[in-house]
Image (cartoon, rainbow, N blue to C red; front, top):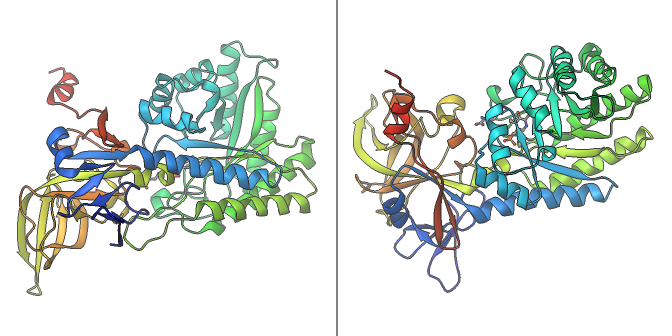
Length: 461
Ligand SMILES: Cc1ncc(COP(=O)(O)O)c(C=O)c1O
Ligand SMILES: N[C@@H](CCCC[NH3+])C(=O)O
């Protein structure tokens, strides 16, 4: 793991691609985040806990805002960055996103409720969903969200009907976008690729289906067509996939113009920007990506003799992923002799697949380090496992840990900010961990730990 000595402090900074920006190891090898030691955090908030570094969140959010705004300003356009709430949403985080100049992308009534509770104006919220309920559509219209993203042909009439039911007319239209699948297959895992043909999201470019949907929206007087939306997948490291996708979307925009005379003012190019999970991995370069994408969009528009559209993007993971470290306490440490005679040390922590389902679901890989002290120089081949009644409950299948790791030690797993708490479950009636924000020496809980009373409150006997 790359680490850099901080001049004059005796502490060592950890790889900022993987760890929060404020993460350091002090002289005793203890991990500190925003100036607060791991032992202190565990003592005050118990474990497991998601420790979220606020400074890193703001830095990442502003990086997207600035990089994309500057790159597209240079080609005469503007960009709205929607923070993808599915990656992790709470009232505090929605407020930060807004304070950083971002809007909020939601994909269920629940996410919409959190954004609204945070005071995000409806106009700054988008609603997605491949199977929106009538009440989700009605609520979004009632909240006057800035866009409802149509995901299927059938939905167009449903949204139009809901608009009419809400008294919306051609003078007061409901803004919509149409989600298009461009056939591009990208992403860190099959389950998180979203724009190839054989999956559930969006309306295909092939056979003119997307074009039909756009025309159908135009034919509904109570709907305002803002533009087309596309999201090709998640944890994408290949910047070119975004460029190929943008070309296809610009082609669609031109086709619609040629057929109807309507030039879509906006294209939403989605999220999916990859991050680093392991030491040595390099996240997608946001500034380079934005600049290259803006150049591609501008040059295609020149080829087509058309104006550059307004752009929106929806990053989630790339903003919140590296903000958070999951802090666990080590319980059972069990050396197991394998068939070939070698030994693997199973290190069980007090959480597992209920707080991080990604290893089990996507084979996602994480790193970890001892967080309360310097371990022995000698290391062992280890596997970090959880406490669930499931042998696939593995946090990290294979890593080296200090040979003297012992019950009571703290283990820190970085880059758990995206799709960690947001995909957490109560499997085995385990209580979902809190989200503790650290910032300039202060710590506060923004999502509290679940209690047994919370669990039992749902159980009506
Ligand atoms: C429509 C849409 N937008 C944005 C995102 C956010 O993706 P990511 O967290 O990879 O940036 C997703 C999830 O993949 C999505 O489905
Ligand atoms: N939940 C996925 C990514 C999001 C997919 C959303 N379309 C992950 O943990 O990587």
